[in-house]
Image (tube, rainbow, N blue to C red; front, side, top):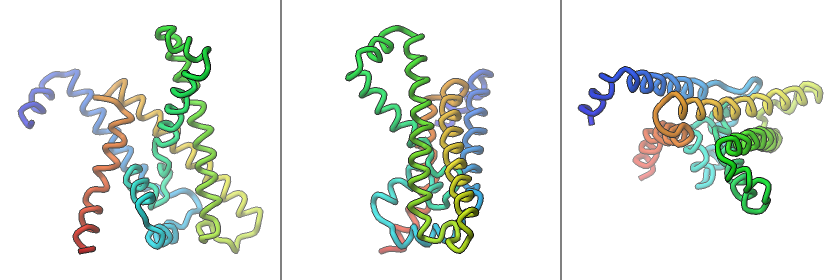
Length: 206
């Protein structure tokens, strides 16, 4: 394995791609630690621990711990994945989309464009659901005036949507300029990032 990596680094183009991938991994992990403006991360972590379950643990592992810390990358690339699945299903149900898919590179570019737009819409919906659903847990401070609360909710939803859009863009950039499929690599990075904590929890729970 190490010999393969050494050989890869000797090739200028491959070295550039690998360094770009490493830089994007660094950006993803930094973004996973950036809290949403106005969010009390400690309150959200306590709520997460008290409501832990298989669904929450799976989603948190999928997002690389971003969901538990309620960072700007809390949605990760889940809106994009959901959007891709929906668009793929619609190509079967809608003849026009099916024709686009068979229309070569131009058709695929158009479908990818629709997928991006749907991803943003889903990110807004998912972000609003998380923020509003967490409001009663004291995430935004229920003692604030209604105007301040509304502003905090709008800012949080906007931050989550921007984070999801940025992750989608990063996935495409990694695919284009890095090594491998960007979306798959982002998922793998998130899962690997949670392995140490998952191992500690498994050991301490015995």
